[in-house]
Image 1 (tube, protein in one colour):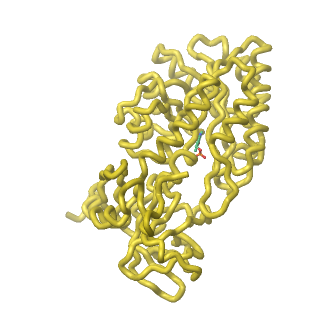
Image 2 (cartoon, helix red, strand yellow):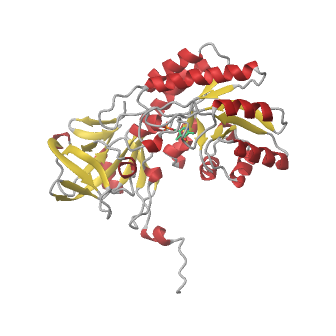
Image 3 (cartoon, helix red, strand yellow):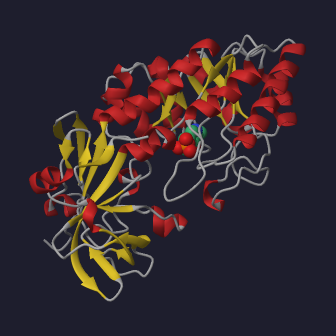
Amino acid sequence: MDHFNFKQGELFCEDVPIKNIAEKFGTPAYVYSKATLLRHLDVYQKSLESLNGIVCFSVKALSNLSILKLLDEHGSGFDIVSGGELHRCIKAGIDPKKIIFSGVGKSADEIALALKVGILSFNVESESELKRIYQISKNMNLKAPIGLRVNPDVDAGGHEYIKTGKKENKFGISFEKALDIAKEYSNKSELNFLAITCHIGSQILDLKSFKNAAEQMLDLANRLDQIGLEIKIIDMGGGLGVRYIDEETSAPAELMEIYQDVFSGTNKRIFLEPGRSIAANAGILLAKVEYLKNNFLITDAAMNDLLRPALYKANHQVVPLLEQNISHNKVDVVGPVCESGDYLAKEAEVEIKEDEFLAIRTAGAYGFVMSSNYNSRPRACEILVEGDDFRLIRQRESHDDLFKHEIDLLK
Ligand SMILES: *Cc1c(COP(=O)(O)O)cnc(C)c1O
């Protein structure tokens, strides 16, 4: 459920007509609904209460400072995958004790910064990384909180690029290896083994994969208990899929029923790292139709604004700002970038004239964060809607922004 709906035939975000936003701030523009973001966060948080857990929003899905602050105010924790995301969280005033650091390639500088500010936990993805963290904490005379990212080896379906839980992926450590590592390193006073974690993929539609992974994680926690290496937290990662077109999806509440069922008897705290299922349908990309050409709608938004179609062959639903412009006539919505992969939606059911606006739905997650300046296109602005109010939370880039880091050798 989201807050982008037609009211008397006109598309609204919460209580704001989308057209007002397009006219005030121009296009392309990302528009987010505060109520939708908070609603999803709330569902996860409420169901985690009985499991003594916290939601660590996946910052890479949507990382605007205002959004991070908003989620922080409402009790969210955060899962980051880079030093840049750590800096963002610090800038947003987030308590480092609510930050988990995931990712396969943490640099020495990133580890040192995370240790210095005192994050909640490192989700460690290899023995080499653990060795590095150990060495750095020894040098800094600090104790490192550790979660071992393990690999339950489940194939959760979805696009090859967003599968992460299979043996052949670069992510995580096998269960056997995790047991060995825990035995070998747990007596080191510089390391504090807190958690086991997993993240089996993204846009997962089949809840059985989550159940399978949860059971395996509980089993591993029990095996660690048996050898006296008790951990306090089982972190199940993110991954729940959302509806882009007509996918059969499950609500966060249904996923939570599975976790409540599997983990009801354990004393471990259960953590989650959802990204897409909180942010995706809380955002749209607003664009203007520049030209009609054959069966194409050419918009002022392009693959540099929304990369998912070009990167994953993803399809997004397109809606007009006036309900009367929904049509059975199918068109492809494409951008001005010089690539045939530059499309935003295939077979969109709309009939929209030149100079009118359209909305590309479900663009709140992995939307703006993946945008680039390809074709020297300034990045879009971002707007947050709250009730009948809407505010800019990121300015549209200027043309000067495009070359401000370049050094003119011929000057
Ligand atoms: C990307 C990522 C997530 C979020 O995944 P979603 O599919 O957006 O819920 C969570 N944890 C880790 C480690 C990730 O890399």
